[in-house]
Image (cartoon, rainbow, N blue to C red; front, side):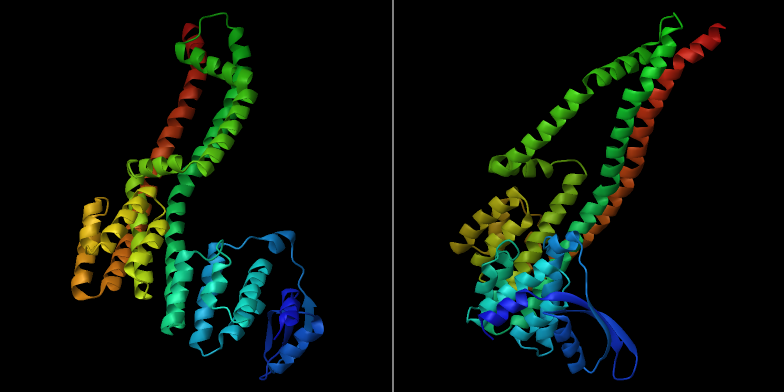
Length: 409
């Protein structure tokens, strides 16, 4: 297969088809092909009686959707399954690319396939796409190629990616409800202050009597919002844009924010456990793949997603390179919990460091799951109480003059 054939594959489209299998049962599905005739021929070679083949219309959203981490995880799982079934590597890339309705992912896989076909190693071909395949992924694949154990290494990589996505989902689900409620409540309160309270102000002006202090405060706050809502909105947008730019450009700001995040009550403990889960899972995956410990530590530090642990891991790497045991180096770093230290020491003594690190990752992942559920259950009533106090306070403050007038009458 040459460059012309590879280029034609890049121009393949997604076709929807219906037909009957060898037993006469109706079947349907999707496949990638250069044309309708080629798609029909491919199906007939599989013993399918084709009833309908038509090119699938893709929306702009589907055609332009970016490649996400879960797409790479699914590809890794599919590739490992095909290799385990004895399918050659190039043919496996063909099958996964043809079966994917994700246009950008299919093009990426065909590009990697073309590089491998010309003699480039799979790890080197993947390194040409660092946006989608990080150091952990490429190092593991390289170790698998060197040891002739690519299929089990891909299985480990798929498991690693799936665990990381599940962990990320747990944290997001714990934060989704309170953040959404707070955002909607802030919008509702702003609308009340800008649109509702001014109508009460006109009514109170006709009373000709002094208003209670809470009512005067709410009216003053409403007047401020009415007069300054546009500048405040612009200032918030400018602040958000400036903070976003500063976050991207300043490594010191990111480091300080990530260090402070670990100290936040309740939430800091959850983040710390998630960081340890990622760190131990990554180091276990790389070490099991045959990557030397000194080379695996930087990837584990980067995968942790926290500057404090990343800097500590850099020091651990120096100590390990100087001949210190990993458990001793971790203890000297001062930021790794006792569970990691104990399991690492046991793993070094028993020669099963990767298994002990995987066990630590599993324990932390379960702990994150339980902590996320507990945090969500604590935050839900807290958010309701705070919002009830704010909205109830505004309602009471606006009805105090009515109660006062009724008492006088």
